[in-house]
Length: 80
Image 1 (cartoon, rainbow, N blue to C red):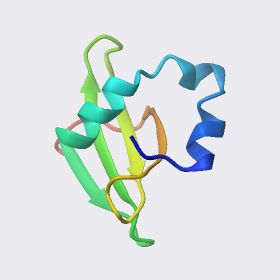
Image 2 (image 1 turned 180 degrees about the vertical axis):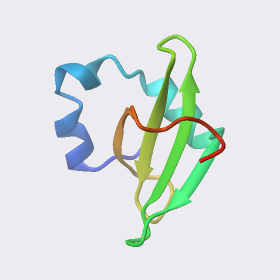
Image 3 (image 1 turned 135 degrees about the vertical axis):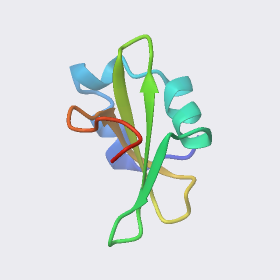
Image 4 (image 1 turned 120 degrees about the vertical axis):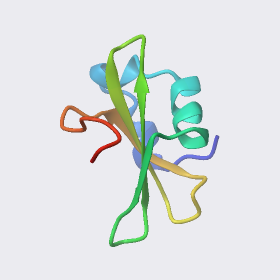
């Protein structure tokens, strides 16, 4: 999995350490919702059943390089 230095640094935070790489990869491959930001980065969401939360993964414009991944408290599901 390709990632930015920012992603590697934020993975050190206690709340991010529990996010499994397989969850990130699955969110990229099988999102329930996708949006393109104004800067070209791509946001993808998927519900992580084990956590009962939605994971947001932010990719660079190439849609391969992970820039950020976190549990999104504001996302409510597909209807967004």
